[in-house]
Image (cartoon, rainbow, N blue to C red; front, side):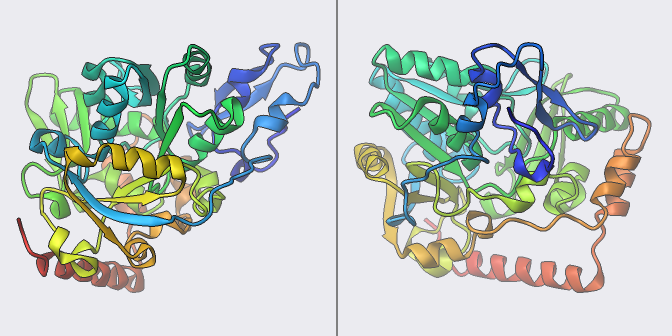
Length: 390
């Protein structure tokens, strides 16, 4: 029986709740808005299955360090602009769908709740594409994946490294299952995102019906904005430093506790890892382009085969040194430190609190931190500017 005594030891993948044969486990949200398993002692038979499939307790990762790294972007500019970087996910997903397979990834539903959904339709890919900086609910998608594999269909799963680990512990290393993980900074709670949306409503007088966390349309890939489409068709858009949700997220003010001690960074859990290729202008300037460049890490033979299969849909697939490519994206290798005001934020966050003022106050950096952040930003921009544009 799973007992959560340390919140850092639960990543919220929901594998235990989905697979319990007696329905004894339900996911419930704590005061911070993160979901954790709760056991019904009357239904539990203490069979131990939940402990065997929990990736925090038992995960055997056969992958070694990434075997290859590539700068890549899609040939189709429409696909590329939909994505946060080079448009790799929709290219990979279309390949699997065109072979009669199915794709599972996170998408917002009509109520702006982020859920992992599974579909065999191209029309579903738009909602699945792009960065989403919060915890998604897995629902019963692992069960649907298992059923699709049982029917002999190919399945492509995309999620955070811990979610990929949950999939593998649930359905095993199936020959028709291919996985993608992302360079994950961490996940915010749905409760925080809902509070942010309430702030938008009070600030603009209109509800947000769509959120692009990485909108590169106005200024390009390295100078992205967060854009919320409002119910009347207008937009609230801001640079990361000026938006309260992104500001608090990047300051590590309200990430899930397990994100501060992530055991799924290296070796990578999935067949392929997708990330922004920050520093591409320094590592391989010939691949730089302000419309977005993906870093693709190959972690398994299956991943290498899939990447080779979709090469014809890529304008650029430039192999580069693995260590140099990973150097500029710390989310690939390191967990982040929680902000010193994290506990205070959750104590003070209520429906009545001004979310904008709260994050502005609590996410403030010390002079030393601010100087370091400004220096890193300057270096990043310098590296990008020095690249050759196509």
